[in-house]
Length: 197
Image 1 (spheres, rainbow, N blue to C red):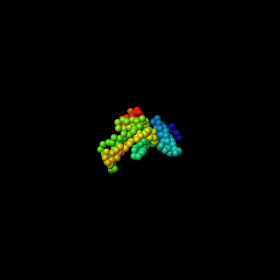
Image 2: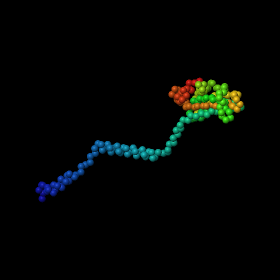
Image 3: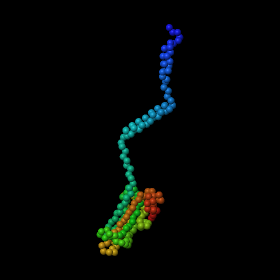
Image 4: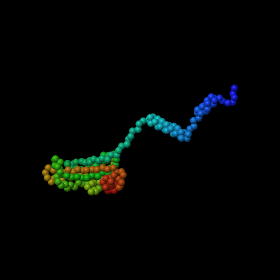
């Protein structure tokens, strides 16, 4: 029969149950934000990996470095140097300059003291002499040659037996763009070939 009161044992059981009852889980703002960021990051990483893995074909890099080079092209007519040009062997437009070096040499390559007094016929319409160098007045496209520098350079008599005239053309090429005082030619040579001629 119920007397309206709990026995001591029942009171202990009820007290124990009341304290062990689980509270409902409550999400704090920080926990909610952290969960959302984790889901977003997982979505971004997953979609990025899926895109990278399913990329159709590999892309080939076709970048090519600029190359500047030149070579001397010349003809000989009975041991006389003629039609001397410089070819742009690079893959970009270039300014070209050339220096004419004449020496007397014997069969062993020994150089005679004193420079020969040669008088090459220079194409002064397309080339300008500045110091020791002839500068081509226009830039030269890749794979093309300059206008003729020396039309003809006749042999002159040697000062001693056993020596012969050697005329060498030393050519330089440098990228044409950019031009002006900030250009490569002006910085390297101190001359802007675009202003010559």
